[in-house]
Image 1: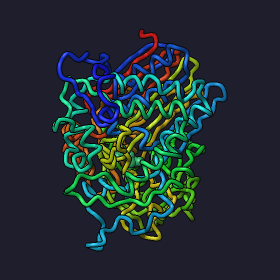
Image 2 (image 1 turned 180 degrees about the horizontal axis):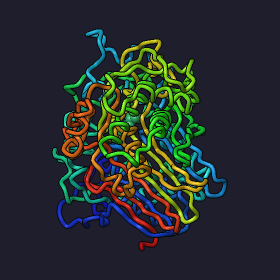
Image 3 (image 1 turned 30 degrees about the vertical axis):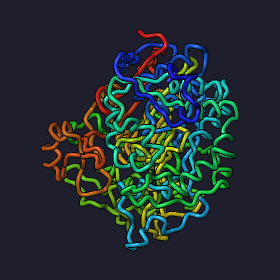
Length: 600
Ligand code: GLU
């Protein structure tokens, strides 16, 4: 792009994106594990990790580095994150010893109807993918930029403008396309070609960006610069806000889009009234540790927390591995039953969070588990109005659906030299979000509202309501030992996020694995359905032993990508000797990138 710079008229530049072939620099080296001191960053992407690390090296703190890293992910991981989306930010302050969180979840417009996801022609919900996800109606009011500003205000030392600078340069100068990036564009071909703006950005020249070419996003660079100058109000008010509203109400479709593209009801006022919320974290005690997570509107903290409370009743470390995994799967099913029955946006639903996270409640839930056989699933939700920790009967009706899960979204973990910690999961929901790039602005809008239940049921805590945040599964988690940070971890993966984080914690805290081993280990997910869905290596290793206990273990397949991978986690462990172990995926999603300030 730079080489065209001055000679190309500005109007042309807006829609032109150059993926220049050949002679590109291969990008920063990618290592999944880094050990050392002085601070660490881990994310799915080496450009983003490197940018965060530079902030730490220059004296920025964990929040400064996290925002710079997240902004860079908006460039190199634009199909999983960006200012068109939302997320949850968890922070440990070395100064106060407190864990605090920000809920930056996308929100339904004020005019969203209960039947917004029902196709008027059929009277039934639109097909989830690609019809419903590719729409204006699924776009929630974005929360990411408000989250960045709020996090910097609360804990950062740098301005938003300064934090956006490295990512702006990355968008302008470009980065080298890898298999994952190209694959995600190709996966979305039909959706991306339905919108002129998205086609022009990701199918410039009629083809997906080639591996090894340099991808530039000058529109995004300009958008970041505008935000750097004017702050978040550049997105939540004024021209860009109007353009977002236009893209939602009248998506920029090609003439014959082959998809219905239902339109949304978002108006400028919805953007103006958006707030990222300071939210108290969830906390449970687990074998002497304190586990902090994200409270509703995410179901991450309550579901991981409840499952851990159930598992705490067993001495997992003394059990054969398959028996421990059996308990992990059973505890997951019980916690998912409760999640589905009770958890929604607390601004509109009365979530019995204290009950769900109480040890007595967990004790009663655990009564249903047997070491030698498997529960019939789906199991009912528990009765939060009456429990005493003693085995008896109980239970209430529960909804049990395996959700549309996949490995979009992204996660990053940062620790700085002072010992502040950030665990941040951010998303635009589906890989490629709604498929709608805001014309001339270089970023995709989310389809987060598809996390609501599609059909309205007044008893469903996750029913559609105006101004409501759809229930999330994002589970950024920070574990403290004796009041000091010990392990921070999070992952993408829709509802599988919960089980991925839980499994990593169990593997690390109970089953003797190092954090890198726990992140690399083969995964399974149990969401209160008859089958456990598992990665092929998990099926091979534990399938027979679990089936002998009555489990039905089946191979997991992502419904969108056809891959068999669950999640793409990152995490950092803070060791007693003051050193750090930063870990990302060695293989999943092409492998992630961990870096430390002073390698050992
Ligand atoms: N929308 C999902 C959630 O909030 C995250 C996206 C994903 O990873 O599927 O739980």
